[in-house]
Image (cartoon, one colour):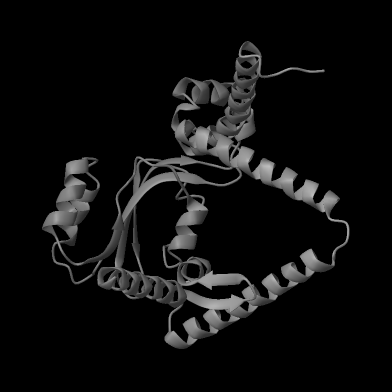
Length: 279
């Protein structure tokens, strides 16, 4: 009897502890609906201050409570919910199907498009890739005028040797910023947008490729700008510049093809197993 009482007491203690833990995890409750700390944490955005965090948290809890109260009243007071239940079930089914399809295709995303498809699409549709902006392959370095080694830097900069570019960055000081990826096509418009203080390049300066432009600014700092290649408005965009766009187009197209094939396989498999019939 003594052992039975002891066991009963231990079970009661564990039960109380479990209830306390569950209760501590709940931050709000309305009727039979509970909002947990984990749900709250996953639902509210990160804020900069404690005050902002409190405001966002309180607003979310109030919104959650109102929503649950409206849902409860809807379930109690709506008389004919059969049609609504059908819509909910249809929407639930559609969500599952779409989630499953996306999960499948995301595993194959990188293999949905091959390079030869991209190349073929580009060559067949070149006229669709006429530029409406100027593209350049270029590099620059912004040098402090007090830098006594600026002429040495300039010589290395125009050498055309990528190792010399690395040497400038690693062995020299006295320049504000630089960009040395002159094998990549970039939009001139984007250059100005990302660095508003970058010197304006005139039509005349952009007319000739493989040239050095030296520009002294109002603060006497010096820009060494090397223009390797230029493509103007109306020229056909290079493949490497439009490749991400083409890849996205083909991925969407191949997704639809992949889904059609997958659905047909499922139908064929169901027929073989006598799990699909039309009456």
